Length: 632
Image (tube, rainbow, N blue to C red; front, side, top):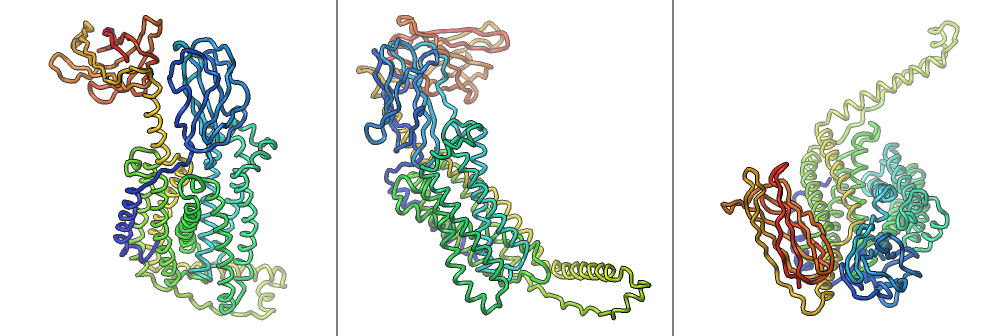
């Protein structure tokens, strides 16, 4: 919520677009969140003789364990020997057993990238000729199961705890000094500290299983915990715990000695608390920056301080917003939240938004690198969602600004002077004085409750305050979703790396093909007649680039009039009879009426392949037609 955001929204948007355009136009290569960019043998390759080793090349250096890379034969038995080696840079190799028979082999890997995230995958290659295999050419990463869910939840709680703790303390020091004595605000900040501390301990325990087996039973494995403590992420989590001890001391002073000082003394102490609190908060923010995306790739020396500023700005804005919401709903009538405090937060929020725009533009350029990455990568799509939520927050803030202008200073009613009864008065009322003290205490509690209710009614009668509450509550709801998206972003492969991996994969595939292999697309037209009603037509198969390796297949079904026909099912298969390979089944996805498509279809070698298409026009009417295609 901010009073001055709305008049300057246009300026901020123009600044965002101009700087983003300039940065993305001149983007330089970078890398973060490791991706497989090449292998030897290549994905889907068919080699004549068994290789002595398998090499994997990643976009950045990775951490590997004994079982990080496994090579499995068609029956699922391991054929690799020894630990993975790192002969140079980002290339890692694993030796194979000698005398391997012909067939299809699966390479599965699970490593940890330099920015702390687990990366898993699998691919196949064949010796002599492809064969059936019992091993799926896919890998379930350790972050996909229960441990991954718990780790992701822990990350969200840690971010939320940091935002609430830091932003709540900043709100008290910078905007509402009297809030240091409000129990609801105290509980909010302490809850943030407890959440961050508990989540950090949980992440430390989960880390070994998260980057390894993914099994819940390994969470309390002390040997894994010892290994985690020797990694960069483990050191960052331990550092965060030590800084949280300093944060606990800061909170104790803020809600203890600070609250008991007179206004003049508070002003002297405020500066020292602000400096100390900023240092501790920046240190905690740095525990994320030093171990995640910002620490790897392009300009880490700039990216890490920028990331710290970004986190601090998020905490000041969203954490302060949470504290403001609590103050509006829970502040006692004796300590009302006045217009001055709301306006001071408005200025703090605007400064935070400006910081978020500048640092966010830099981070976007660094992690995306091109305009196309906004829509072509998951990271870019999530980032667009985050930007949209930011715009919604600023829009709601314009309504909050209107309510702030109407906010009246809450008048604190004068406490009524309680009539003092002589000691004997109660005794007379109670007969012999029995139960007099209990009765007096009960009456005092009743009078206090009635007075508190009366003061609350007077405070809530301010229409500006009621409107501001609803507006800030809406902002807080959007902020919860925004924080969830930001948490997912930190665990997502940056768009720049995803596009680099795609480019490397596409350029590597043709190089693995034998000399003389063609790259021209093949189109096959096959009439069909299923024998049923409306069962006649033509099926067209486009195979691109019609060479060994990855191919894109498009299937078009048209009726006798040349118009697309919507039928229940289309299936394909590829057979190379000369080499006794196949049939290799392909089930394309329906794109639109009369159009099916499949990408990444593996054709293992050149030759005269028979392409069979099964067309089903009803529950009982189907036919299989075929035609030969020259591959390579």
